Length: 370
Image 1 (tube, rainbow, N blue to C red):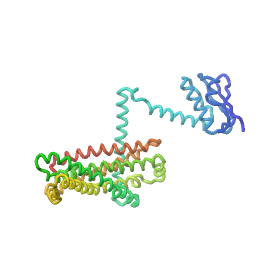
Image 2 (tube, rainbow, N blue to C red):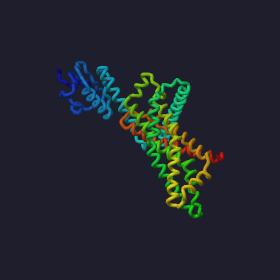
Image 3 (spheres, helix red, strand yellow):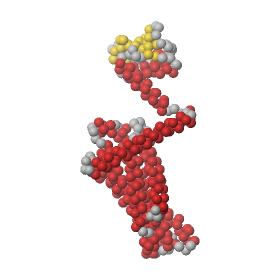
């Protein structure tokens, strides 16, 4: 085995020779720089290089970086082709990382606005492309040409539906109690405690129930969708599926999208019933009303229209939750923190979409007197 060497040959060459393998004693980058400080016009050569592993590229990369920091050039194009490609790849990665970590405060307002515009336009394009592919996948499903597996759809139904009932029941019951207690305060001023049933019924059926279910499912199921798909992205499973010609929309997105969209109205009905039960407890225990008077007032002051508005809202929120979770998962990065960022972004996106959608639906129902 040849001893690894790095010899400086005047006037401007550093020649590497021997076997550069892990475990061998070899000249370090610091030792080479101490003996031959950086200057212009130096080139690296390896005409008698033997075997080498990652030990040699690390030393060479350290030399190139040190020369560039000192403001000098170092020509490494005379090295073997494999080493040149490795150095090009490493240096490109360093440039990309340095560009990505530029402090925003060092940029002018115009530059920051430009970067924001570019990111926004790219995000809008990606979202539009995702929704378009989802619509095409839905068309294939309706035409009976989809590759979606029923087994996957059934599994996502369980996750998005029955397994979410305990947390939905707990929060719905507490929300019904809270809404009834809050409404009891002004109702007592006018001796109208009986209308606490109307307050709980209309409030939960039309607005509070769908919003509560949407937010719970955003934190529970949408984040899970983003984490699952993001982990597949990091592990390069999505790339493997694309290579095999498996459509990601049919195989991964459609089961989650359909499961969430179908389960949300059913969860909304369940949440309405449990919240009404919570209001009944307050009415009986705190306001001293009879269960019959509570139920009678509820049926007289609420209508099927209130329930339909709530179910429509639940359907819309289910679609938005599933889209946000799947989109963030498929567009997850590939580094160690990417899955966490995708999960957080999914929940935040869901909440923003929920607030906007509920606001528009509420305004629309008021304007149309629905």
